[in-house]
Length: 143
Image (tube, rainbow, N blue to C red; front, top):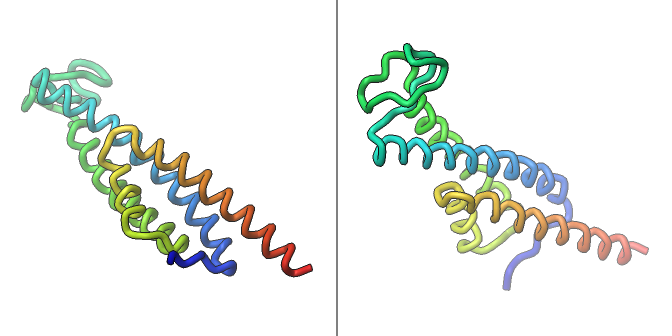
């Protein structure tokens, strides 16, 4: 039997949901950029250079970056945002008192392209619906 979230945690759930939504979108966008970077690197043998001799943003042959290596930057930023995303997932999962498979699905959203967007929309709907219904039940029971 699954445990229900405690009513006193509803404000924290809303805050956790907002934090999760922001991190899900940032992580999803960074993952898509990472995929594009990997395609450039491994299929075309190129890296993304920022502010180099070829202009503001350019694809240069692998290993020849003279300015800012945006390829490495994308990799690092996605990695760190994924850690923040996992913290947001864990926080929301804990408040909602869900089972472990739900946490694993949420965590997978940061490593499978487009999945963070899909999971975020579904979880947001589920959580908002739950909170609305549960608050209505509690208000009705109070009268």
